[in-house]
Amino acid sequence: MICSKCGSDRVNIQAITNVKTKHSGCLGWFLWILLACCTLGIILIIPLLTNSKIKSKTHTEAICQNCGKQWRV
Image (cartoon, rainbow, N blue to C red; front, side):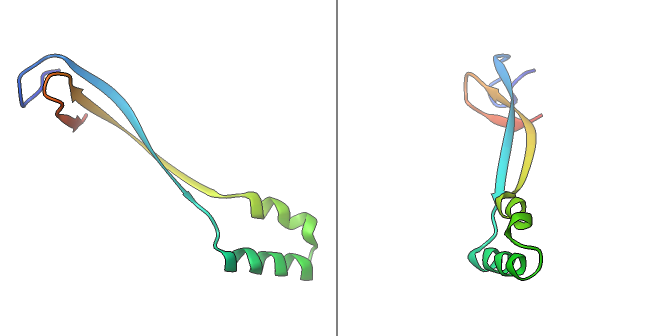
């Protein structure tokens, strides 16, 4: 692979992962706890409280070792 900026063939390819974690807010926690206490009890709600949503995306980038230019592959 050749860099389009400087013409060098010293290019490294890396896989980059972006991770986003989404947690429930205080109001969401309160509603889940209230629901658990009123209906099924606290034992059934514990797995729901400890569960968080995680999204990850992976893409590949090439980086020129001479000039530092980065681009997606």
